[in-house]
Amino acid sequence: MTTADEKDRSEGREDGALTVSEVFARAVEAAEGPTVSVGAILRSFGARAYGPLLFVVGVIMVSPVGAIPGAPAVCVLLVMLLMGQSVVRRGPPWIPRRLARVEIDSGRLRHALEKTLPWFHRIERVVRPRLTGLVRPPLTHLWALACILIALTMLPLGFVPFGAAVPALALAIIGLGLMSLDGVLVLAGVAVSGAAFWLGLATLDAAT
Image (cartoon, rainbow, N blue to C red; front, side):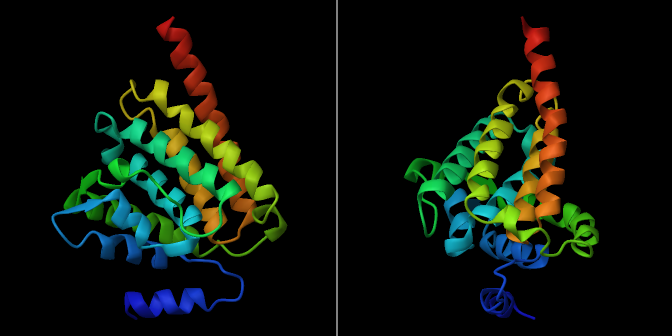
């Protein structure tokens, strides 16, 4: 099945859920050249970009890409912009042109996605629309605020090698839950975020 076919099939699905395979196919398709911009990845998801992009950003930050200096700060900005707009805006998210032009090495991105894809394929077997009332407005606004708070823990944790991986994992799980309309998975991501907050506080205490 081609990426276009997958896209058409997902858009025709009544529940509006996206699978991991569909999300990864769009992200890989966007990264065809030597580098891929943040804006190109965003555009590949269209109007329903919020959950899938949160998932992809989380996966990227869990991978070695997250250890690149400055990556946690870019991630925080993206999450704040995306989740803030998911509350007040309908349609595709907007990001500043300068941030949209930030480029990532396509080979490194594809490698990160391909390394994590088998793991998420296993999760995909048990992910399905559940407790869908938890992943629809107005509760999605609560999750958006939670994601912003989780992302902010990356700032102190960014000074610790791979310290941003725990909040990134929480964001990836929540994003996966939002895009697949799985309220159980969103709650699991929020539970994982507790470890991120604990690590963030511990890092701040050690720095003072």
